[in-house]
Image 1 (tube, rainbow, N blue to C red):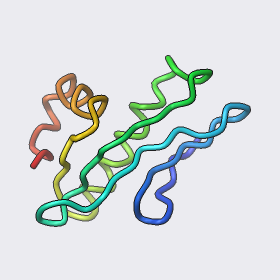
Image 2 (image 1 turned 180 degrees about the vertical axis):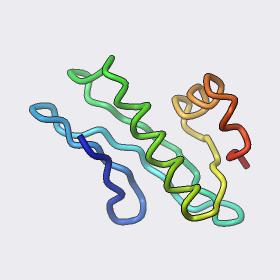
Image 3 (image 1 turned 60 degrees about the horizontal axis):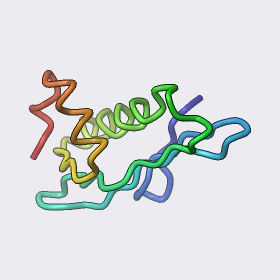
Image 4 (image 1 turned 135 degrees about the horizontal axis):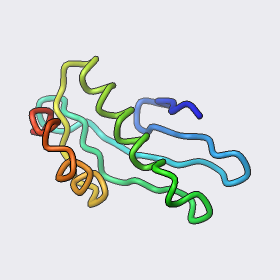
Length: 90
């Protein structure tokens, strides 16, 4: 499964037979990515799909040279579990 950045406001992860996982963002202060909503279909939960979405956003932010604002509770929790990436937070 490959995460895609569609329409410059979301990362999507197609899930065969279950729709898609989505991580929504908007541009915030200093052009940072404000990651404000993560949704994974109930039938696909427990497969680390949210992790894949956050990692795709993190890679994108690094490529763009911008920071991340973790507004979404899942994203904030993810960063608390990955302190090595805290330098990417605004």
